[in-house]
Image (tube, rainbow, N blue to C red; front, side, top):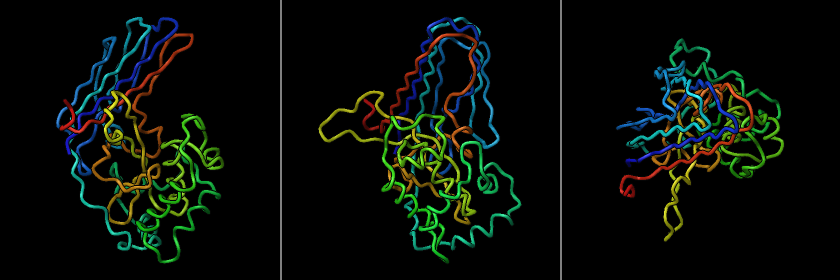
Length: 293
């Protein structure tokens, strides 16, 4: 499947902003069953400085500085990506979760995707006893690591309600867990905390999810959204699991960045020099190439 992607971010400021410095993680990766075919980034006002680098986890990061006074700031990121992932593994196969946990500390690699980076608590993912206890029902003694993670994903999908008004970006994990409500960021953080509490490496993955309009209805421009899910290490490789939808990651998911939690992979982060209120609008399109016209 080939997708045309567009991620449009627009800020409006009540008073002029004289300076802005931003880090952008908006370019899909090549790897993990997908290939970046092309991409383009347009920023208004035009930045005085613009450079690209790889962050610690290997994510493509554009750094820019705007020094032109402005009341609106617009970031228009576009890409064309091919996604071809293998079928999901059989949950009944693979290493026992205790064996996976035992392997982690014996690993010497500190590469960007090394499991050691993703087993300890992080800024947005503390280890909480109540979350670890919630995970235990999915991991009986001798049970498979992937089977347990898959069951945990399904339980989160069943036990938690999607509610965009229940949480904000900065809502603590404990609050989202106690309320059993939130969005994909919350569900991913909860699942990561549950897995790490048992000693299993888990990563936060940001990207996009293909959505399908109702039969006979047109695709609405800008109606898609950024998405987040979990990468779980099962002793030999990473597997993607989406607790918001209760599904394994296949060709409908497009990876942009990986990190320990949302703080490592935020699509847009930075600072501005200004005062007064601001508003933000984000519009995302994930369109299969055969529908692009």
